[in-house]
Structures are given as structure tokens and as C-alpha cells.
Image (cartoon, rainbow, N blue to C red; front, side, top):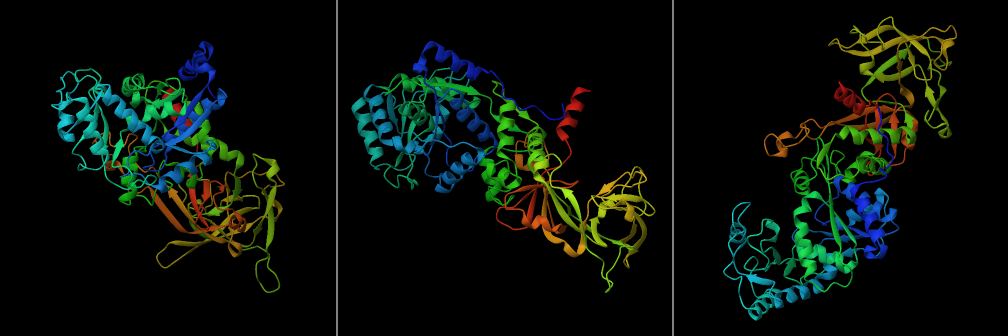
Length: 566
């Protein structure tokens, strides 16, 4: 197939499990999921899959999906990230119930439960530094070493933990650890850290807390407090599930114990989705911010013109599996192209202008070329979009690459003595070339055939090329950003271990001397149009007449499939 089908799978292991739970009366037939991003960066395409899964499954089973911000690290989290996350979720087509939830909503309850585990002899304060604790955890096939503080009396642990809470100790000097099994084959169960001392200003709680829960301590308990039934996570949390369950098994939960299920994360070729790496790209100015159209962030894809429906359809198409894999970015682009083919209106734009003068074009009494208009369809794929009138005159702009003084083999566009069609207008034949002092072609002369109005010859003769154009007197200037892959390697960093080694220094080409038909100036910011013969381009939401190339017209995914079938 040249374009993939977008129908959602009728079944997968996650949905099958939920159906089985409902049939068994588990959770009384109730389905509740959650999307729990940490507000330490902008969402990316991988998060889009998680959003579609969490919200989509909840909707399919008449359930609810909350957004809970995992704000347990005051050093890296900001209100800006919170606002961007909520904006991206809404743009993608999902509206979470209000109020938006936060892990920090439960800091008091989490603290009380931590004291409960201490009283039950299941948690202790460790005075060793992080490096020592990490070394003593051992490794696979290497036994762990128990902390000398592991058997501290319960009352002493309570006293020490309260001193941690009250700010009596320096950052990093003590942690609270769960007392599980230092010899367990699952490293997550080797007395994991529950709390660490970390002074800083939290964007919601200010300086109230100087101890903060780790993700593993906060996550499952937050799920339980909210009444989550199915905690859907990506595969890297597979080894965390026994710890998730261990904590919940030892606490007096207000509702049923949630169930964690893992699925494969979304990875694409030629991009990175690590928030740490994305932040480095932004901080080191390899890109122009979190919404740079070269990034796989949702704000970047939005600015580049990716329709949210195309992203949703793509996530549905790849489905849920238990095996991580990297999908060709061309597959995602095929969904974008198909959606835009139906919705985007057409416009004519010349990226690298070359003057074309029609020497036999009629003039008025003053000698100026007469201006007429030709009617062209706004979108041949959607007749309801109607038509528009485009000005035409004796002086036009055409693409430099559409002319060759000495044409190479299989070059069918304009060259001396050759006749071509101007889109929706006339047949023209090149008669002369004008060059500058350096021998560069600066102007092409041609004659037109008045009988071919509308782009068709009454005698039935054919031409092998149809070219777009813009009337020079009416052209409006535009700036166009052309993009190549941000990373040259399909799996950035795979060869060297450092993704930035594969950064493409030529990922952006900015053309500042483009010429467009007048209707392009009426394109609302954020709207995508098709530049005829060139691709789809999105009007920047902040800078007028700046257009980002969304995707090209060529079906690269079909070409990949053909190669794979050989």
C-alpha cells in the first residue's frame, strides 16, 4: 500500500486485559487511567502515543482519564512546562477533567504513609551518600550490601525522618529507604530510596517541603488515591512493577489496588525523544527553542503544521505491543501528507525566482502588460473548497530549477525551443535567454499561444511539463524554511553513544526571497497550504509570511515499502 490504513486495531493485549477485568467484575467494571508527565520539559511524539492510549482507552470503556503532573523534583520543574503540557494535550484533541491533578497534592498523605512504613519496620533512614548507596546495591549476579543503618530502631528512624522533614540536615546527607531485600534479583527491590533532601523552590508548594518523594514512591500511591484502575506505562517501567505492587500491598488504600501494565514506547528514526537530550538541544542553541519545527516535540510538530488527527491516526495504526521498535519517520509523514491532501488549499509560490517575460503578451495604451486572471481550484481533492482567481501578466516568476539552457536527459521543463504548460494559464515556448556579465541566466523570454487559455490546446497537442508561476507585478514576498532531518543517522548516537555526533549541520535552509501569489497573504497564521509542486507549508503562528515546510509531496513511505519487498 502507498498510504497506510488508519483504522484502530480491534484488539490488543491491553484492551483484552481490561475486557477480562470487566467480565470478572474487577474494579466493579470501572475503568480509570491517567497521563502523568513530569513538568520538566515539553511533550514529544512519544508522549502523543501515551496520551492517545490513556485517553483513548478510557473513552472506549466509558471511563475517565486524569492528567496528573508528577511534580516531585523542584530543581527541574517549571510552570511554563505545565502550561505547555496542558496546551499540547488540548491541541492533540483531548480535554482532561478538571481540576488538573498534581503529585504535590498528595505530599502530606505520602509523608504519613512513609511514617506508617517506618512504624511497621519497612523503611529506614540511611545516612550514607548517594554514591555509596548506589555501589552497595550491587548488580545482576552481584550481591547487594546492607546499609549499616538498616536495622536502626523504629523510634530512631521516625525521629531522623522528622528531622529530615524539618530541614535539620543538609541536602544529600540522608535518605529514607524502603526495607525490602538487598539480595533480590530485581534491582528495583534492593531497598529503594523513597525520600531525598532537596532544598529548592517548588512552583506549587514553595519552600514548605525540603524532602521530596521519588517517582516510584509517589507514582503508585497517587494512582491509588485517585482511584486509577489501570496504570498504563511504557516498557522501561516493567521492572518497577514489583515495587509498585510492594508499596501498595503494605498500605491502607482508600480504593482497589491499581494494576500496572506496560507497552512499547514510540521511537522514530532520525529523532531523539529523551527530554534530557531535547533540553540540551534547546539550551545549547542547536535549535531555536522547544517549538523548533525540527524537533519531535508536539509544539514543534504543531508549528511545522502536523495535523493532530494525523498524529492520532498514526498512533492508532502502530498500536500496542510488548516489544520496543523504531518506526520510520516516513510512516508518520505519510499520515500527515494524506490528511493535508484532503484539507490544505493550494497556492502557487516560487522559492528561487527566475524572471520569465512573455514577449508577445498584449499591452495597454501605455505599453504596460495587460493583467488578466486565471481560475484555478483551491483543492482538487475537495470541490467544496471552490476556486480562486490568480492574476496573470506578461512578466512572471518561475523556479530557477524549471529552466535549463542545456537540458540534461529526461528534463522536460522549460529550455530553448521547448513548449511547456503554465498551470491553469497557457502554453509557452522559450525563445531567448538573457545573461548577466558573469554568464548567469537572469531572465528567460518566451512566447505564448493565446489559443491555449486554461492550459489546454484545442488541437489536442500535448506537453510533457506543467509549471507553477507567480505574476511578477502582483507577487507578495515570503520567507520559507526548508527542513532536512535534524539527525543524519536513523538511530542517533547508536554508533558513538552520543546523539549529537549525528546532528545534521544542514537541517535548515531559510529562503528569504520567495515570491507568492496574492492569496497566500490571506492565509491565517497556523494554517497549512500546499505550495503547488513543492509540498505542504505551514504559516508560522508568530511571524507573518514565514512558512515552514511540513512534508513534501513525494510518498517516501511507499518507496521504503517497495525496497523492503524486494
